[in-house]
Length: 271
Image (tube, rainbow, N blue to C red; front, top):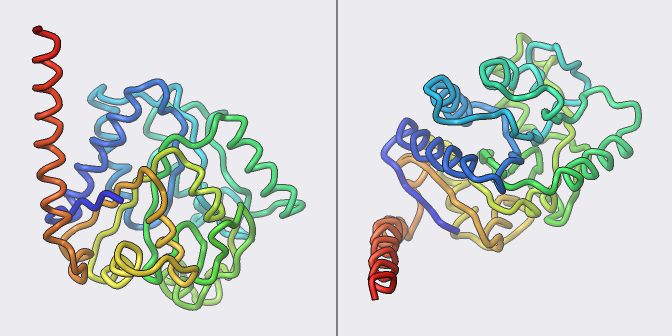
């Protein structure tokens, strides 16, 4: 797990946007797993700005969103389908047929979730899965106690998640209690994962995810065993990490190592 600590949410966004742009510049990176929520909004704004400057092209990009509230139609103001339209899709040149979403109103939940898994496989798998982190350590809507091998399915949301989502709804009773979500195992199948975390309220979850034991009580901790994970957080979210000095040292020396390797290649080529 590569932990990158930046000064503030703006710096986190800049790093993440550059990483996404770099990946999309390669043909083998064209299938993205996308999150919703407060943290990714700045990233989507930065990607839109990059698209408008001609720095990134979404024409061949295929997307699969992580989750959706059960009971909300796609046009509902608080549906995640609507969120993605307003915050990314309607501003870039992505093809509608390349956008994949879980339905909040499926006829058969089990079959719908199985079909979503099949579509991911048919697309060749997710190349880059982008994640946020819940303050209880959840990824997607995989709440604490979720199986670390789970697949796309329905989940009952915790009271803490419902409270976090309350600010988006007019009344408390309007907040959905259930959702469909990619499973932890589905997320772990991605070739590469980029997780964003900002704010002091994520500090406990960051500590548990990065430095705690791997446990279903913190679903994000399973990322410790994924071979290609980059966690980008701000100083506030990193506040409780015990080994933050080492993470900063690693980042600094990763750049130095790349320069060292480039120099070695030049020497070999000149001989």
